[in-house]
Amino acid sequence: MTNGKLEKAQITILNGKKQGETIECKFNPSSYTLEKSVNYGEMKATGSGASIMQFVDGNAETLSMELFFDTTDKLGSDDASTEELDVREQYTKYIDYLLAVDGELHAPPVCRFVWGDGIDFTALVQSANKQFTKFLPSGVPIRARVSIVFKEYKTADYHKSEVSPESTDKTKVWTVSEGDTLWLIADEEYSDPSHWRTIADQNGIDNPRAIEPGEKLELPPL
Image (cartoon, rainbow, N blue to C red; front, side, top):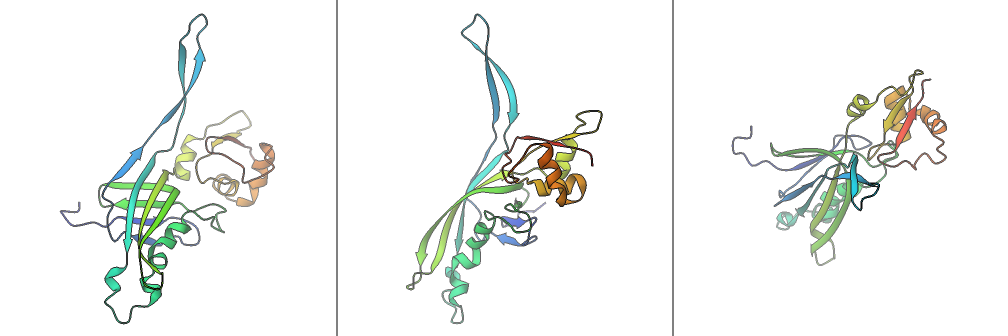
């Protein structure tokens, strides 16, 4: 329990080259929005103008908000460098990293947004729109607003709990989620990312980057 203490929202990088690095939001968001949706298929009923709605699957939940970053509190410091005042260097470059392909993962990293006891959301950053609103005379930005959308990410343990035997040869099925790559799936299933080719061959995949969320992949026994 926080017992009335002011908690700062934080974004922590969970994997990749910058695993463990945390962005502390100097100013907490004034609001945030959680959105969840599901997909239905329509089937025409014979002899009727009405459609039968059939559940297909659910979509990952999204979390959206506006974050405010500012370094103007350092303006009165005689020894503050331009880099220390540059809001891009101090804050928004980390947002950029959450949208970039990490060399170790071959995909953007997973992150965790936590704000006290109110919300704990493991996700990938789906989009971020940065608006710079205050500048030094040199043009260096010292204030920014970032409209950011996080998309829910399920852990490998969750995926494993969802995987079920497909046939007597113990071939399994993996449902692709946001951020999944053949390398990560091979590492989780076979403890060896080099077996991504086995998965690609089993599923007729020519481009290992061309897998989509919701796609079903067969994972054959080795």
